[in-house]
Length: 71
Image (cartoon, helix red, strand yellow):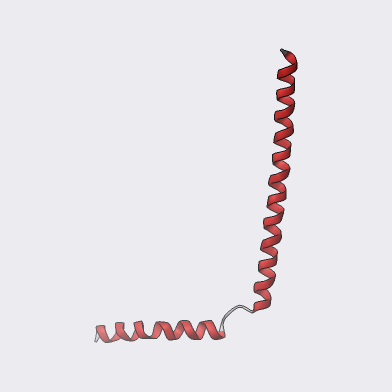
């Protein structure tokens, strides 16, 4: 009896997943909005990292200039 129950559950899993995919999926509009938001967040992160890189480069340049002129 236990093996029959396990076989029934194993056979029902693909059917449940199929019904869930058909009737309970997210709307495409939300997916598009989420994708666009993710692109904008990625772009903002790249801009932030670029600004941090520029600040570090200027700081290293000033440090090197100070060290070079002190000699």
